[in-house]
Image (cartoon, rainbow, N blue to C red):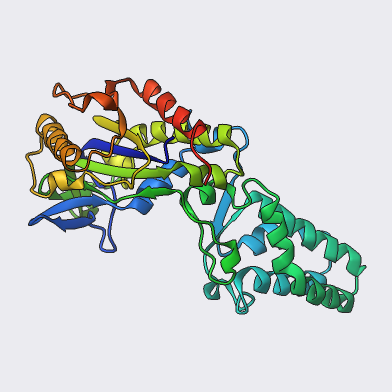
Length: 382
């Protein structure tokens, strides 16, 4: 039975700015004596989970629930609906109580004092229902609202804990996949079953500074000559190695034991990893591409990245990169013989080799996703 599903990819992008640092330049990573262009795991995960218009969107899965990440969840989602129906003093009392319950003791001191939290739709709906109930029971009395809110606050942690235990996806699908940490309520933390590495170029960075101007279309002949705006940005090209791991029993557990839901998530996630591109400055670089290689491995031994295949930078060439990956994989097989089952998709002419017992087969993306989903259905219990 499969515990881990490993997903290795090679993606090619040309003249793009995929992930910026705090100075607006492409993120970088020193590795093996060469500086590489990098895409952070946070950037990758955000694009996968927010691809709601994609036919394989995670939120298009039947049974998936949304989640919202914000400092303003109580303000907008919980207390907001009360403002038109109840007096300002009742709303103010309840808002203070709910902000402190959700965000901690300083939660009522403005949004700058709050941690950005991820809450699922079931949790938000329950909180909104509780706020509505307390407001209604106060019957227009601010004193009654204060007393009710104080009483509610004392049992909040235990009550929402019961909700979470009885709900399949209390933190929404986002938390079920990528985890959640709430420092004010450790019991609400959710362990991530999907691990994502930073992607990096298999070769040394290839970047240039792009000088560009903007010209005023309505400029008159007697106006000053020259451009209206002169700016610089950075663009880079690269063949990126990406790596993700899915702890299948952990995913099934976070999906409330629903194996069909977990299988659907794995199926769609394989599609999203292969087809959804990250990228800043989309309007001026069109950074859209699909994976040149997707290698899936299913097994029950501890996962291991194949990043070391590119410890020494290789040329920016797909055939060379695939050959380097294949060589490193063969060395690992000979040394450790961990016996993973493998399937892959490739646009390269260079074929991957494999031990006979791995069942290595070359499939289209649809076949890869279906193969991965079957392993989720058959995963052992956590």
